Amino acid sequence: MSITEDKKVKKSIYSLFVKRVFDIIVSLFSIIILSPIFLIIYVSILIDSGSPAIYKQTRIGKNKKEFKIYKFRTMVINADKIGSTSTLPGDKRITKIGQVLRRTSLDELPQLFNVFKGDMSIIGPRPDVAESMKLFTDEHIQKRLNVRPGITGLSQINGRSNISLEERIYYDEKYSDEVSLRFDVKIIFSTINKIIKKEGTN
Image (tube, rainbow, N blue to C red; front, side, top):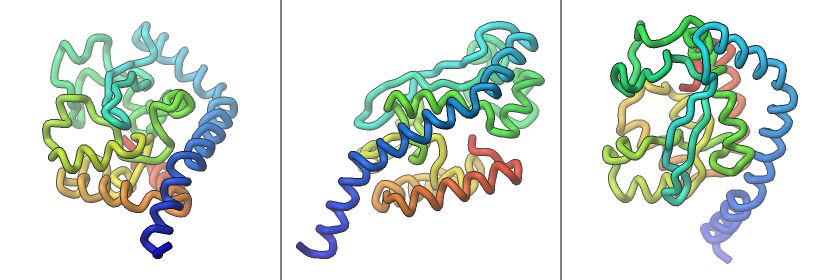
């Protein structure tokens, strides 16, 4: 077996088995440990702006499978009908609690349930809505959808929304090509460092 073939086998084993087991363990442990924070945020949103406290949106996952992504709601109810689906700094639709959640990335916590269910992974390209997929080439879509989308990934630790479309494509494809336990651990620690510095992962 050549070195290239050996790498492909190791990558396949990690992606299909080890990575999934890792996701289940980490997501379940995190949900249990962080459950008091979940409850505090949930109640805070209800008090601040009413129900629902969880925002659901259809995203595209591995192998083009659609799923509902979960987030703590950070904008006013029916925000999508009031304005653009994208947000800018100072967006008036963002609630008081939402500003804190976005700044600290705590709005992303419910995605741990997406990970546990198998819709997402802890690490991977961020999932897009169907409309956004039109911005990418078929080749890029095929490559990035070979892996589960993640809560955080290379794009998030290298600039988040501040990077260009070309840079995001580069990081997505790089991760898809080089996915490994070592790579994932490196991204996790880099993400933690970003959060500590209040740069977030949105």
